[in-house]
Image (cartoon, rainbow, N blue to C red; front, side, top):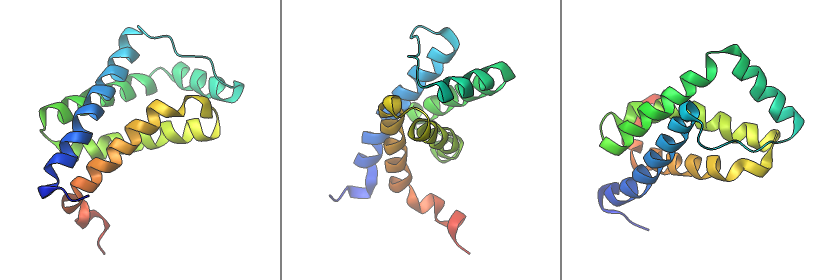
Length: 129
């Protein structure tokens, strides 16, 4: 599939990713959606992270800031670099501790990968020797 200047691919990934990140980021602060209970190991990890008092507010803030970046199409490269470790950890936690809830995080992760691909020329210097 060929996209002219990756504009279409970028828009296809950028807008749903921005909306999804904004939804989950705001949900972290306002809690309108109750998280489903998962396996014991996953619940213990999430309780420990929550009791630290600072991890989740930082993660939710990153979700909101990057979603605004994606939806406004400003500072996209910085937003991708900020959100990548968060989405990688969300996918890994679900892969190893609670695979039942991997779909939303997996979809956001795939959209993030599509954005990285669409903007690969901006990141090529990060992986060059």
